[in-house]
Length: 203
Image (cartoon, rainbow, N blue to C red; front, side):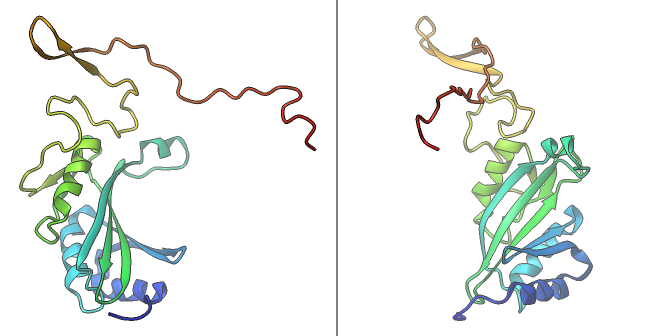
C-alpha cells in the first residue's frame, strides 16, 4: 500500500486513459475525482475501474440513488434518476466517485454491478426500495427498508410526506391492516418567531 494518496489530477488522467470514450465527464473538486458515465457504458466502465492496472478499485464502499427532479426548478435539464457509487482502491490508496444517470425517467433501470462487487447487493436493493431504480441482473432485487406491501418509493421528490397508506393492528381481525392515510399533510418548515427585543441587550 502506498504511503500517500495519489494526486487527484493524476488519478483523473489515469482513469480517462483507462476508460477512453466511456468517460462522459470527469472533474476534480475539493480533492475528489467524480466520473460520469453513460448507462450503456456503465457495466464495462465499472469492470475496467476494478481491473485496470492504474485503477484497481477493489472495493465498492457505497452506492445510492439520487432524484434530480427538484433541480429542474432551477437550471437542471438532465435526466431524473442517478446512481452514485464510491469506489476505493486499498492497494493504490485512491478513491473515485462514479455517477450514472438512468436513460428513462419513467422506468429507471441500470445494470447491476453485483457480479463485480458483491457489496452492491444491499446497496442496490436500497436504491430500488427508496428510488425505484431497477438493477437488471441483480440476484435478489426486493425491498430492504420498507414493508413488503409498501406503495411507492419514499425518497422520490414527489412522494407525499404523509405517505399513501397507514397501518394499524385490528383487534377484531387480530392482524395488521392497511388503510388510507387519516392524518392531514402538515408544514414541516419550522416557524421563525422574531420579537422586537430578541437577544436582550446584546449588540
